[in-house]
Image 1 (cartoon, rainbow, N blue to C red):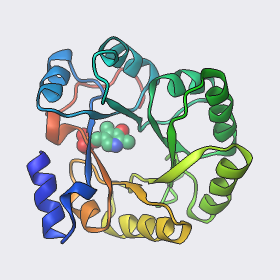
Image 2 (image 1 turned 60 degrees about the horizontal axis):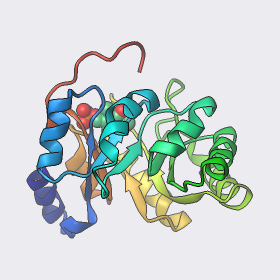
Image 3 (image 1 turned 90 degrees about the vertical axis):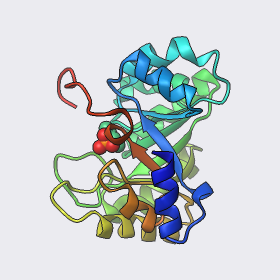
Length: 217
Ligand SMILES: *Cc1c(COP(=O)(O)O)cnc(C)c1O
C-alpha cells in the first residue's frame, strides 16, 4: 500500500514524504494489527474511542512512535478518554466539542493536535462543519479554547466525484493557512493526493474488507 501511495504522489509530481498513510485499523483482528506494525506502520486511525482503547491501550506502551488518530465522530462525554488516548483528533466539528476537548486537555495534561472535519457536501446525515462556518469554528477553537488546530478533514459524498470536494477542502485550508489535509480513503486516495492530501486514511485496501461493525457507524 505504501508503494501505491508513493506512486500516486510521484504521478501528482509531489514529494512522497509529504503524504502519510493512516492505517484505518477499526474492527481489525489483533493479527492484522501486528502484521501492520511488523511492516513498520506506526500511524493508525480509529473511529470509536472505546474500541480503540481496547486495541491500543495494551499495545501502546511498547510503541513509542505510535501515532493514533481519531477519525470518527466524538461525543462530548468521551472527550476525556479521547484526549487521553489519541495524538490527533480529526473530527472537531462544533463549538461544544471544542470546549469539551479544551477541558479534557486541561484535566489530562495531554495536548493532541486537532483537525476540523468539514462537511463539504452539506449532507444532512454527515458529521462536519459546513463550509461557511469553518473560519468561525477555527477562530473559536484556537483563540477561545487554545486548541492546536493544524488542518482539515473531509469525507466526500459517496455518490459524487470526490475530486471537487478534495479541491474545495484544499482551498479552504489554503485560505486559512492550515497545512494538514486528511482526505482520501481506499477508493479515492490517488485523487486526494493529486489535490494535496497530506494524510490518506486507508482501511480495506490495506487490511482487506472489514467485518460488519457492531451497531450503527
Ligand atoms: C473507515 C474509514 C476510512 C477507511 O475506509 P476504507 O474505504 O476502508 O479505506 C477512512 N476514513 C474514515 C473516517 C473511516 O471511518
